[in-house]
Every structure is written in structure tokens, then in C-alpha cells.
Length: 568
Ligand code: ARG
Image 1 (cartoon, helix red, strand yellow):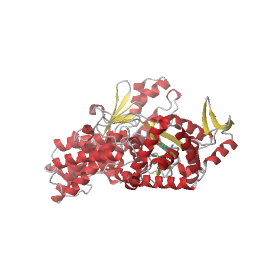
Image 2 (tube, rainbow, N blue to C red; image 1 turned 60 degrees about the vertical axis):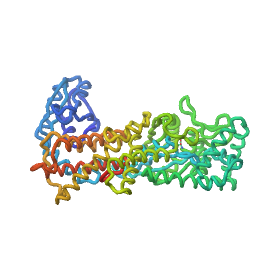
Image 3 (cartoon, protein in one colour; image 1 turned 30 degrees about the vertical axis):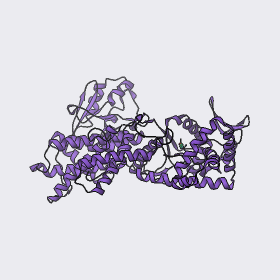
Image 4 (tube, helix red, strand yellow; image 1 turned 60 degrees about the horizontal axis):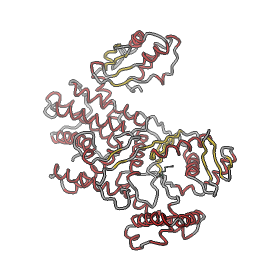
């Protein structure tokens, strides 16, 4: 990718060699301008000449020499030099960088490209299976999905976040059987989801040596699906009670959905979907079932007993979404184990002329350290317990470090730090990898943790508060990037939109997290090494740089769903 700062120059440079060896390329493909690690090599390095040289069978250094000319004398470019086998090293002008930074931080979206142009995206995330407690598995979907929502929104996509609740599955048949046999109404009144969970577990235990229970459960599910009044009433009540509990957890996690259209919303459409698929020649009957053939695989859309499948529901859901929103993109966030389901379902949807871009973001497991938390029900760890435990641990750190802050503010800080630490731990690793839970690391004040990021932001706020007490306020006056620590920090802030776009393009919140961490490191180095309030002639410029850092870091924190505290 090419940073917006350099894009026009790169297009011009590429045009200079477009005739060599008859090479043809699309200006959208002139990629891979990367930040350098060593300032001696400039601020950015471009290897395009090397790539084209292969195609054109030309000398890469000669091509680079030609392309270099397009950069010379351009606003902001101090120099461009050919290095190594044919890289172009680009050196940017510090006062130009400062001016660009001023423009970036005056933008409420901190320079993030509005690539969405009001296109529509649906993010399908969280989606727990109702009547069971939300457990840590759904936490990752919720955190990752929420950041995808925030990333798209800042880039001016029109976003619909949809919680596709599992509220119509066979678990209800089991629950109804269990309810009719083992319910404890007092317990249900006190803590409904706990009671549902208790009887659900009980069902599993009994069904092991009474297989007829499964038969009964199937019958209850059929009755429910056919509209039996008693079963519908139980279902509605279980659903309502579960949602009350879920909503409290979502609120704590800082997550809001635009829609909560669960599987049950599509229950009356699956038959029509099967009929349409047959009529459109996408599906066919086979041994009493209805299937879609995909190469040597088949996808079942109606089972022999007439029941629809997870795929049928997803197809009904896609059709609904296309009719209602006509989305350009649909993103589904689930456990990687559902990869096969989505691959198949996407193929069927495409065959069925669904034109939206379909994306599955699969995430790895969350591993908890053995024996660290009591598991009240089986092996699933409840999300609320995890949040409570982390907030309690954060609270003791806050009490110890910031005893002078009033009690209720300390409680708020601990809540933001604790829930933020759980969230950040989840986001900082790439979605596909497994995450291991580690309280020590996630609550550490140094290193790549939420407390470190939040603290860096609070430090900037505190510095600005002090300056404010001395009568200073930011007025957007010129920043001078004289010292390398100032310049590096400014460049880090200017690269924020690049990191943002990369995170959005690859559905990788970790790319953004890494960059926010990097900006905090650069900010802290600047803060420790250079005097700000007592900076003499540099004071004004440095305070403006602190203000710029605060804004960009806050935007990053908010996009990650962390609460940028003003003090802690
Ligand atoms: N309820 C499912 C689960 O907990 C996830 C649903 C994902 N979304 C979808 N449209 N299939 O595994």
C-alpha cells in the first residue's frame, strides 16, 4: 500500500517507466511503499522498480534512477535516493510533516480515508446461543466484531451491526423437556439464566443413559416450530430472560447492536428459500433431502425429515439483508471451526446471485490458565465472572497507585481498565491465533497492555491540564520537529491512517492495536527525554505536539473500544 502522503508522486513515478519493455500496470497496483526502520534510509522505502524490472526484464537500478526524478522538487520531499538493488528511499521534509500533522489532527477522524463513501456493510457478530450463559467463546466474536463496526464507521461506511442470536435451535426442545421435569421456579425467579443452565446440564447428564430423552426433545422442538402455544410461551420467556442478562453484559462491554435479528426471525422463510433454490435450479432433490452440489461437496438445505439447516437459515438471512439494505459487504465473525460452514454457504449464496462481498473472520480459541477461576457450571467460564475478576484486580492496582483520587472515580477507572484489559488482550493478537489469558500481562503498566495505553493517554491529558493551569491552551500554532524524538513521534502519528486502513482491509484489529501501542511508545520516549513545560523556546511547539498525540491516541483507543481516561 502507499500512504496518502505519497500517492500522487508514486503514480507519477510509475508512469515514467510504463513504456519500459512494454510493461502495463494498473496505478492501483503500485503498492508496497513501507516505512523504514532505519532513518538513514529515509522515511519510506519503495521497491516497485524491483518488481517491474522482473516483468520488463530491465535493470532495476536504472528504472529506480528514472523514477526517482518524479519525487525531486516535490512539496514535502527533501530527497529521493536509489539504494541497494533498486529501492527508492524517500526523505520527507520536517516542516511539511508538521503541516500535514496539523491538518490530520483538525479532522475528527484523524485522517482516516473515508473509503466507505456511504457504502453499506453488515457485521454479523457476537451471536450467542440463547438460554445458555454467554461464555468466553462469545467474547472474542463480540470484541472483534465491535472493532470491525468501529473501523468501518470511522471510514464512513454505513454500518449495520447485527447480533445473529442462536434463538431457534434444538436446545429449546431439550430445555422444554428439562423444564417440565426438573424446574425450580424460585431459582428461576431469582436467576433465570442460571436455572436454565442448571436444567440444561441436567438434561445432558440424564440423556446419557436415557436416550429416549433426546427423542422427546426432538418432539418438543417440532411442536415449538409448528407453533404449539405452550412451547412458544416458554420459548419467548426463556428468550426474554436471557436477553435481559446479555444486554447487561453488552452494556458493560461497551457494545451496542443496530439489530438483534436472531435465527428465529427467519423461521417462517426457510421453506420459501428451499422452494426458490429449487425453482432457480440451484438446489436439487436427492434421496428425499434437498441439496446444493458444489464440486464434490454437497450442502444440505432441507433434511430428509423436512427440517431446515443452519445453512438454510443463513440463506434466508442473506436474502432478507439484501432486500432490506442491499449491502456491499457482509462480514461474519465466528470461531474458526465454522470456516467450512461459511465456505460452503458463501458458495451457495454466490451461485444464487448474491452480489455482496462475503467475508468470514474466524478466530482462534481463548485459553484460560488451569484452575484460576472456579467454574460454576461445567467447563464454560462465564463472561461476567471474568470481567468481575479482572475489574477487582484492576481496582487493587488503582487503589495502590492513585489513592488520592476520590473513591467513586477510582471505581470508574477500575471498570474501564479491567474491561479494557480483557478486551485489549483479545484484540492485540491476530484473530486467527489462539489467545491465552494472562492477568499479569494484561494488567501490567508497562508493555503492550490496555493499562499502558490508557496511562499514556492520561499522561498527555495531565500535562495539558498543567499547562492549562498556567494559562496555556492549544491554538494549532506551528509545530517544529527539530529533535529526532519529536520527528519520530510526528511520523508515528502521521502513519496512523495507514495502520487504520490496513486493519480495515484485513479485518485485523491487531494491526491497529500494534500501531496505537507504537504511538504510545513514541510519545513516552518524547515525554521522558525532552522537557515540555520547561522546554523554553520549544515549549509551545511541544505542547502542540502533546495535544496532537492525545487526539490521535484517543481516536485509536476509541476505535479499539477502550475508554480514554483523563486521569488514572
Ligand atoms: N450462533 C452461532 C454460534 O454461537 C454463531 C452464528 C454466526 N452467524 C451466522 N450468521 N451464522 O456458534
